Length: 319
Image (cartoon, rainbow, N blue to C red):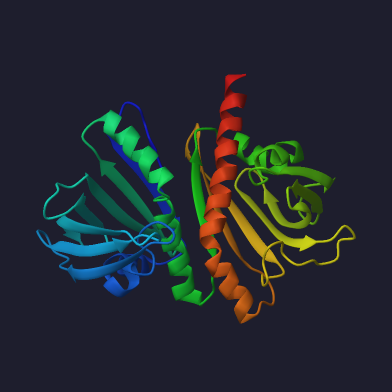
């Protein structure tokens, strides 16, 4: 989520692979909202939800550290399956932090969600965007995607989005150049080196990540590479001879993960990356449970990598 310096608004767009009714229900049915609302690790308790103009939604967010955050949302516009406008972040003793406008549109069995967060000034918008990012609030909308997928198919997935101020072709190139990948993809405090590096459909790469806990080999097999919109690849941990190996630090973990990376041009110099990861092939119940539990850690890891990618894109633009 990003705020333009000249605007008091923060804008966000997501496209969900789900029909409009499913997305609306996920927003408005308390039992469904409880499964995705808030940053990773947060849960909520709804005390009352009166979805009508002038009605309120009273709920408490429970942080992973045990801190509770009471909230009162007041609805100003309720147009079923089309639009919500509400004041967010207030309580009975505190005024709302900002006003949110959400519109929903359906096309080809997918739903586009556009959100506008209106704040007091451009300065407040910048600070709020920074706070939301640091608090992991952007993951709320990724959790919604995961909830919709699990509701529709019963399958667990991991979703993370990031918008970069760079043209789509440049962002895509950062995912298909081994030299670039080695600079931004590895976790903080590690180094990445390719042993085989042909990124193309039907080809595979092999790389090693080295850190304080030793060396980890990873093989990626590319199922689709369609510039500049789509990359699909599987990945698995292997040993130096490319035989399957246990995931480092995990007693149980799916043997193979499938990653789908979508690149969406929000503007000529603005690109949204949507990464969806899901277990691929056979996976046991304990392995799937471990995958679900680790989604907070995966968000943290990808956020760190995307921060480095963002810096790299800025450096390139300055040349």
